Image (cartoon, rainbow over all chains, first blue to last red; front, side, top):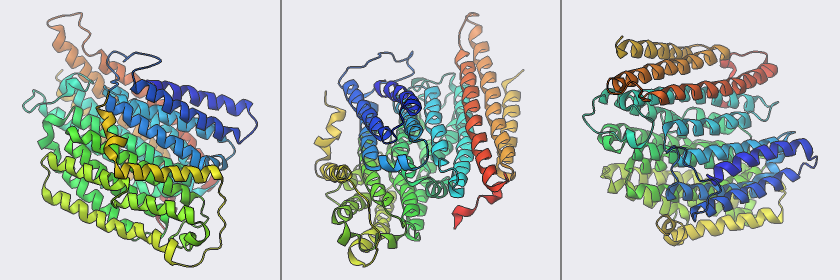
Length: 460
Length: 111
């Protein structure tokens, strides 16, 4: 509750700040302060101290997993502000408003992570989506940004419609929106209504997390949106949708898993295949990262597929690894003028630190051992194995991870083995220190994932 | 009246909305079709709410079963209104730049 409350209040505060504070660069510092406040408030709640204790008649559920997940996301938010705060200010004329919208998104993220009732899930998803439509279109004179915003808006509203129809059918079948009452069993009276609801929810949530074959909007939207906001959409928001996905399917539909697992398998296979194979053919790193985010979503879908005790741990670790590495890589990309692979040529000579950080992030995304991505992939796949997944599905995922090495390592090849590139990157000491910290965290999670993160799930 | 009629009505309204979103090319009309989808869901929720109430009222006429379905409808209305304001702003922004609301213009990102 702390995070939901603080982020909503801080968002309003930032909006008012835009009215009264004329100094533009104050926005970034104020936002950073807010992100620190969110993180510390959330850590306090994790240790049992909440400013406002109410679960709204069972609508919210303050479980340890949700709170820890929120901690990971708010730490990612701190890094996001540290690394890209300057670029957020540079997007347009109203820096305070962009930060305010980002804080409103965070409050929606809090709702999605802690919901116990489909009404709250719906509100959370909408509170995340509506500010994002605005942020996507925030570069108002740029036709690409306009187009991305309209596309994102139409697809988002369409999938919300499907989502709501699914909820309506579930309500018809069970008479309740609470997750516990939706614990479905084979042979319920209204099993047909319930199954229709499950299928519709599966489709709409796949839209939201951009899983194939409902991914077609993702590359266009990620490519057209201002790069700083792409970084936010691809990491924190995507991870937030995944915890909602997992909680619905493990919390309510695990009793019907033999009904939805076959279609889920198809979605996973398609997502991994389309995401990885299409990414190989991209010339722009930004667009490649959009496809790579589809491919990574394929791996995160494994933990939803598993829906067992390992699923929570694996999703937590994957979200942490994926958010940190992608934010790090985007932070380097944002400094570039040229978003193609050629733009990275010769970066290692000019900016050895940036090249090193980008390499570590790329290693982590590809799942090379000693980085966080390796254990993240290992945990999601072992969760899937534990739930009795077909061995071929897991082998297929590993092969696809090997394919991903090709397009990720093109960045490293460009940075270290190619000459050229005259562009000058403007960096600050804070930016460099934050990048170093990202690397340290990625390596820490890659060497001791248990004591760095996962043990917190059970520790009291 | 049996619940089947309501389900058929709501699902056909919803399907008209989906068909409109998939076939029409005018952004405003697509937008209206999305609203039609949301309102079909509202109708369905209210019908189910009444159904659950009728089933529970046999034992206890003062039962509160089914109120949550109607409450949900209010939330959908509020969210739909918020979506309308943002969506129309986006469409107006696009109109200012290209003087058209035809979604066929939306192909710059493909290449």
